[in-house]
Each structure stands twice: as C-alpha cells, then as structure tokens.
Image (tube, rainbow, N blue to C red):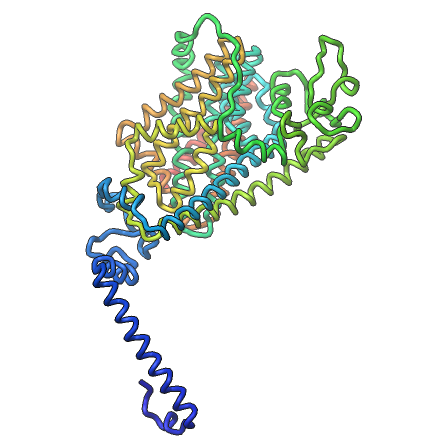
Length: 567
C-alpha cells in the first residue's frame, strides 16, 4: 500500500486511477505466483523446497548438510580435509540425470569447451613453433658444446625454455649422442636440464588467471608443483649421478647389442592441431639439429630463403638436395631457414621467399605475441564455460569424481602425454582446472608425474630412428631419472608433502603481489641458470684465483637460497 500523506491526497483523479491499477495488478501477480508455487510444491515439494533454499543460500554455513557448492561465496575457504564423501550413485545422478533443457545446455557447454580447448591447443602449438623460430639458433649453439656437468644441466634447461619443448630438446640430445657429437654422460645432464625447462610453459599459462586472485593462487600452485618436483629431483639425483654414475651403469646393463632403424610417430592430437598451425607458422627443426651437430656453423648458412622459379610450395622451396646425385641449391632444389613448408599444407602464411634471418625472427616474434594473446583468450573462455557448467554442483561430487588413486593418476598423466606427445600441453591443459578448483593440488601432482614419464616416450621413439645404442641409452636415462624422482618424492607421505607445501607457499605469495609469477619465471628459468653457468665457467679456468672466487660465490648463493627458503 501507499502511505497516507498529503502528497498522495493531492494527486489528480488520473494519477489515483493509475495507482489503483498498479495495486490491483500487484495483488493479482501475488495471487498467481502463490498459486503457481502451490501447484509446484504439490507436484514436487522436495524439489520446490530445494530450489527455494538454493535461491537464497550461497554459503555452506547456511546449508543443513554443510556442503559447499561450486560458486558459493565461501568456496575458497573450504579445505580438502573438510570436503565430505559422496557416493558414486550421487556422482552418476549429477552427471547423467537431467531433463531435456539441461541436456541442451550441457551440449552447448560441451561444444563451447571443445571449441576453446582446440584453439587453446592450437595456441600452444603456435607458441612452440614461434619459440623455435626465435630461439632455435641459440638453442642449437648451446647444445653443440661438450661441457662440464653443471653447464650441461643449465644448457639443457635454457635450450628447453627457449624453444618451449622438452620433447624437441630430448630428441635433439638423443640425435647428438647417436651421431657421436655428445657423450652419453653429457647427454644425461642435458636431459636432466630439459626436465626442468619443460615446466615453464604451464607456469606461463597459470598467469592467464590473474584476473581472479583465488584462481591465480590455485593455478600457480598447480603449475609450480611440477617445477618443484623437477628441481628437487635434480637436487638429489644430479650430485648422485656425478658421484656414482648410477643412471649410466643401470641403463648400460639394459642395452641390446644393436638397435634397428624405426619410424617417427606423431600423436593424434598433433595430427588434429598441426594442420591449422602449420598454415600460420611451421618451424624448421633441422636447423637446430644441424647447428647442434656441427653440420653448419650458424643460421646464416640457411639464408636468404630461396624458392625455385619464385614458386612458394614444398617442392620448390623445402625439398632437400641429393648431394650424392650432384644436385645444387638454387638449381635443383630450394633453401629454407627457420621457417619451412609442409608437404601437405604447403608454405605457411609467414613464409617469405627471399627472407633473411631478421625477417624470420620478426615473423617468429609476431606469432609469439599472437599465440600468447590467443592463449589467454581461450583460457578465459574455457574457464568461463567450465564455471557455468559446474555452477551449483556440490564439491563432494566434484571431489569424488576427480579423486583417483595416485598410481592411476600417474598412468592417466602418462597416457595423455603419449597421445599429445608433450608434457607441456598436458600440464598446461590441466592447470586451468586446478585454478577453478575442479582438480585439487593433491590430484594434480600425480598427473604431472605421469606427464614426466610420458614425455620420455618421445626420446625413446627418437632413439629408435637411430641405429646407435648410445642414443637409446640416453633415452632410457631420461626415463629412469623420472622414475627415480617419483620413487623419492611420491610414495612416502612426508616426502610428498615437500613439493606440495612448497607449491602452496608459492601460490599464497601471489596474494601479496601479482608480479610473483613473472618474477618467478625470470629468476628460476633464466637468472639462476645463467648464474650457475657463470660459476661453472670460473671453475673451468683451472686457476687458483678464479677457483677461490667461484668458491666464495657458491657459498653466497647457497646462503641466499637458504635465507629465501627460511623466509
């Protein structure tokens, strides 16, 4: 009703009639709504009561069951040990029991998720190709030198961080050992470093959730648990290998007398994503291998790009010369640099006849920026679709569905990585799920361990292409290095808590500043490795002055790291 004030008493007859109609309409709506609600309650009183409660309750503290639902105001406050246990029947009902309208929404959401996931994978592939174009020459030069163990470890890490692919790095290392360009012992240290460098990609992906502080905390923790496992494994197994050479002797005893030539295998995911990415940019991995093996001195050998008769296709530009038949570049075959053409899709959009090294580097830089932009857009879209699809679902259901046995998680992570042929892709796709809370950090850990196992398959396949048993030995060392790390850091609960607590601490640090992830990436993957490389070079001078200086610097670095950990 309206207040009986002098203002309303002074209204004109027309205004009074208008107010009366509104009052009548309001009363009619109230009676109709009550009638409708009464009918609904009569048909399904439980559902009606649930709907009324859920329309108001947005906190687990107000629910009789005390369970948290996805999207609640206090969603971030619930701890893993506070999540109740659901039955598989409840999981099946939440998953499969829906009406026609809900199934329609699920179908649209699934299509949206697949759309963003495909272009997310496409962006990762384009990012990898761009990094190879930009850093391929430098990475090949780094891998070409026979170095001391510390330098080998750092070079493996830097090369992988530059080209954003441990699979490519390990394949090149295996090829170097197979060609007798690098010894088996040096190859072992290089693959240890590659294991560290591979985790930079998913750490970059975690920064895509910077808009939400809680999501960034979880995503960064989910990404860095992979980093910490690799760093901790190297911290123990690297000095152990220097002292005992246990990986060398273990794999040496397993080697056959000879290895038959095999064929390279391409995973199904790459077959789906590569056709589109190859139309934009396709990196020439042969350049990195040729520089690393010493076939050429620098990338300048491959420039300027030359296509026969000015025709830009694979046959006229990228087909290789048969030197035994006397074929010459520019007469019988073309020449390509860091960007090459594909037999099926032809030359990519950023390929240019007559391009020099600077032109290809600019193309790689542009594609790198485009891939990062697309990566963030697809990540935001994927997260948004998943959040809408899971809105209102109980955490008990989500936790039950994703809480698999650790051993099964390792197998799942390895299987996914074998399919996509990249541990970076596996962990990068899973990181957003950790960010929105669908996968707990405890479940992410075994999945990343499985990804580490799966990525060694690429090296094993590369060793099969070579007929040198030393190449197979390095690939086996990569596999048993990861298995040894898992044995140390996963089965025993007290050891398992070390990387988990470290990852949570790094995640909480993002609450203090959003600059923590980029600073972490720069320091861990570039500054510290370069510092170690410089220190190792001091000891390689074999003079008293440099050795003493290096010793003091090492002590200072150790004290600094200890102070940081204590802080």
